[in-house]
Length: 316
Length: 304
Image (tube, rainbow over all chains, first blue to last red; front, side, top):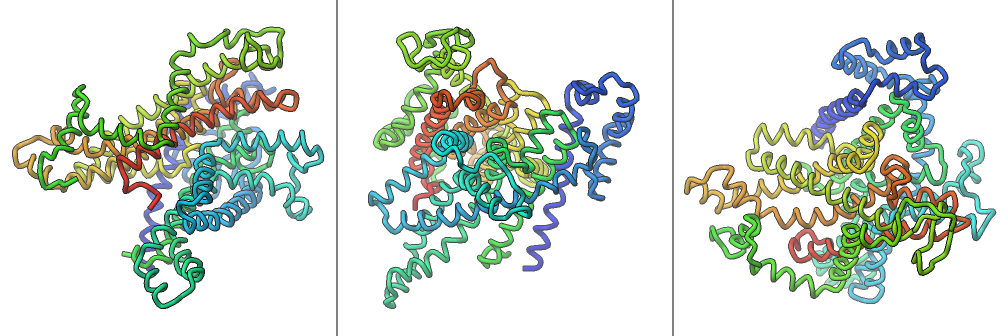
């Protein structure tokens, strides 16, 4: 097991290296002069001193490979560069917003699993009934409806039907936990809908598959009540498949976060990324992209390792 | 399909499909009949067909110029404009039709390019194995390290929006998906007896890849491509919604929804219509894909 973990963790290194190369290459490939683009619309535009400072800051007087190595060296010290707009270190700007994302994503996953596993199990147990048909129809519809549309309509419904609905505001958890939770609850629920349909579908498929296996027959033969067979044995064995899907869905969730934060005006990394794109703040764009990709591969690794812990057949 | 007989009927038919033989083969007729029996797949094909037709015929079907403003703002449905007008008095139906064109162009363009590029990568990696495989798949792993929307977002943020860049952005995000699907199939086909037999007969690598490997990976590619059409529609809409894709005044379902946000309390219909268009298009390709998967590649079916 320890060997498996070590191999998997080490295999992350070339991938992260490649990710840094790709993210850097995009910045280096920006068409036109990056200083002109970044300073366009700024009061300092045309100020030769400010321009020269920016060029030095971005190491633009050096060759592209040199710039990459300098940037990469900085990464090892936790230096993602400096925001052109705020003048603050990029890493600090990102980390300041992490709690918002953690809360949103954590609640969304909890809601999706909390709803999806029971619904999927119900669908499997009631196979080929109207309940099953309804749930399956709902899940196909669920992943065909764009989440940002649902979010937009939620905001609309809130303002039309319930003008006092706490929405489009944000209060940090530390300042007022109760208020924070009521404000984040609705966006989290809407976000959970991005992953809910697949969790329902996978739970249903896994439960159905397990129901056909020999151990279920054994459990029934030794006289266990059906309820116990399903909830104790089948469901426990089905959760591994659900865990796997949840890992894959983290990517969908990260994309969904960007949209959710934009629509509900929540100050997370997604909004930071969008704002920096609007302001052409390239150090922040690069930093936030790199950060989110790193989080994504790391979570996937953790899910894989969890999978190996739960399913010994995978440890080779 | 039994691989022990080097030229089973199914393989010959599949080869005929690849070679572009026009005669309707038994396989495709059989697939068509079985698809027709699935009501949801037919519904999906219908929805996707309507969107596709609307996109292709947008210029003929549009009752008005989608960009022409008029003083009739926020007008309800009428004989002149069936779905009413938006905040600038532009005809909503015409804008939705042009939006379908953008959506379909990006979806089909991106999926087509990703199938070609990703397919070539996967075919080479899976067929030749060894170092070629290792090098190509490392590159694919790097692309896989980005959530799909994030990678597309980064591309349009860097190179700007517009239909062409949207297409490239989605293509880049899809290349790893198709190269993985095809690599897996190519790996397994490579070791099969009929490939060994053709090699023994003196067939060259290029010919084997084209005539033996490709027909066998067609089914999973078609299934995957159908689902990816629907996610591509979603990505295009999302990026345009965020203001990074198709730029106004040119209509896209995403930017129409985004613009409607400022007026939706006044006229909720403006926010409902583009979202409904996205949903129907995505639903169409998803239902059709579900049906295709059940028929072409039952192993992938999530319904045990």
